[in-house]
Amino acid sequence: MKLDTLDVAVFIAYVTGLLVLALWISRENKVGGKDTKDYFLAGKALPWWAIGASLIASNISAEQIIGMSGSGYAIGLAIASYEWMAAITLIIVGKYMLPIFLKNNIYTMPQYLEQRYDARVKTILALFWLGVYVFVNLTAVLWLGGLAIETVAGVDWMYGMIFLALFSVGYSLYGGLKAVAYTDILQVVLLVFGGLLLSYLALEAVGDGAGVLAGFGILTQEASGHFDMILSPENEHYMSLPGISVLIGGLWVMNFSYWGFNQYIIQRALAAKNVQEAQKGIAFAAYLKLLMPLIVVLPGIAAVILYPKLSVADQAYPSMMSLMPVGIKGLVFAALVAAIVSSLASMSNSISTIFTMDIYAKLKPGKSQSHYVRTGRITTLVALAIALVVAEPLLGQFDQAFQYIQEFTGFFTPGIVVIFMMGMFWSRANSAGAITAAIGSAALSVALKVLWPELPFMDRVGIVFLMCLALCVIVSLATESSREGAGPEGVDVNAGGSVGVAGISLDTERSFNVAAAGVVLILVALYATWW
Image 1 (cartoon, rainbow, N blue to C red):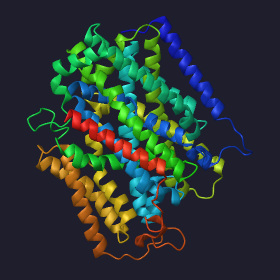
Image 2 (image 1 turned 135 degrees about the horizontal axis):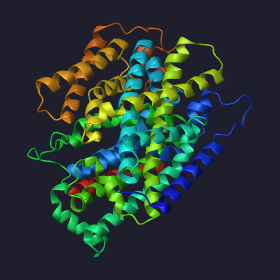
Image 3 (image 1 turned 120 degrees about the vertical axis):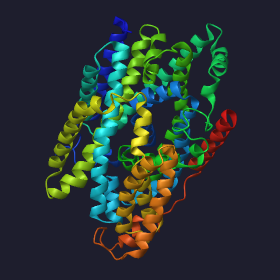
Image 4 (image 1 turned 30 degrees about the horizontal axis):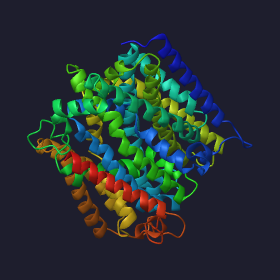
């Protein structure tokens, strides 16, 4: 499938417009240029609507659109649990965790761990996140993005990846998080419009002229197996989405790790004007998450009827774009690229933030603010270059890249969640317990996968989380809890102090409470309908 001349013109206009907008947002307005707070945290001045839009734009990238649509093609609506359960996770993060992070004025998640535990815990997790962001997340977005460009535009996947990397650098390298966050507003509008339009056209095509509702009815009949929200053990995809465990098991652990303690996601909320503004942004993002399955999963399910012989499931979404009329196809292609480059920019900015603030600044203290900003920009370029080189060797052999990402990160997420949860809500947790949980998470996950290969990975995540929780408690109780010299002046890091929940108000505004209740009611209705 090729793009027509009008499609190419629309796409070029979008790329040009976005770059101009980003450069305008990034212009210098202070003497001496940007400091680290400006570059990495957008001057801590983001409003709620920019936070919410940027959270979603950072999240909905190639592995979400291409990968989740591919999983919709292979598995069905059950994969939407990742999106719908994320909505309630965001509400919990906004109420109980975000106030703690903002109270401590942190740049990065490793920085919080240093305040709460010590430099060892911070360094271990910082190096881990750098590795995962470069070799898993960044590579996945580039690879799936290159695949999408090849399918839609007929451009070789390698050239597609190079274009995506250069595009993300072009609009984010100079302006930092501020440029990313504010341009994400445009990205999300285009993404939602393009996704809804594609779903509409898909249902029209399935209905063969009888209308969208008729098309949806035909889809639920002819692909009825793709509309089971809770898979039975007999389902061939039970290993990926193990029944009721999706609602009460390991998916919660994975969601808290991603939405609560993941640098390139939570960094937007850390850049808020205040806690209330951050919570409004979180609630806005939660409602957008409820909408995402309609945008990314439904086209994949429709492709089961319209393109039943795809060789690779991840080709579902790009193939569906052939339904688009000339001109609109270019706009929707622009929406797809918008999601990809937004995530690339967000990830690379977070990589540069962690490396600069948690690693480099400790090795080279006392440098100027401009020096650290320059180091962050160089780090972005290096990370993207590495991801370009290793993307195809790491991901080229996988049929469903989204599931690969979930399973790989599932080796480490139990320990991460234990470290943060215990650090925030149990004052006795110490660095020895935290390190044990981190090491135990990887070791126990590998052991269970080898010794119990038939155990679904999501169940394994839940079991390992409980084991790591026990390890953290046992080791913390068995070792000294005295201060190890890592936290802020006068704070006993191992007794919680200001870096825990003690002394922090968890009260939320009425608007947030109403929004939270709405999310819960919608989720109950969705699962009651598709159980």
